[in-house]
Image (cartoon, rainbow, N blue to C red; front, side, top):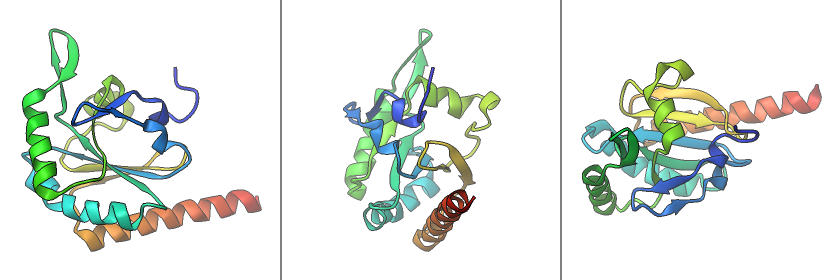
Length: 169
């Protein structure tokens, strides 16, 4: 049972199978870009997300969620090594340094079952999370750098306005 920030309490690993510190989701907005190695629009926008992850580092955390990093085998969720090898090769070829994580069972369920309203039906799909880990917006499709800047700026402006309204009320 999750009591606080859902995303901050997840036990996650990156595409290298190293533990990922999910506390980055606590108290700071996040952009979670859900991608696959075979998805050319996903791959095409990754260099833009890399640049923006540095430019917006103090305002929002940008994370890539590798949709095919895990698979079900013998009724158990396990790393999909072939897909993770492809993801690692892609990350190295593009010089990506922003976190690229694999889903745990909780994210796997969110991405794959319609019951929760966050099922991924197209790649890339991006979830924008507020500072409390609430998915505030879902964006379908790829963007160029300017498009992502507009999306991020608009989202951050919305969060600021919400905070102002909360403080005034």
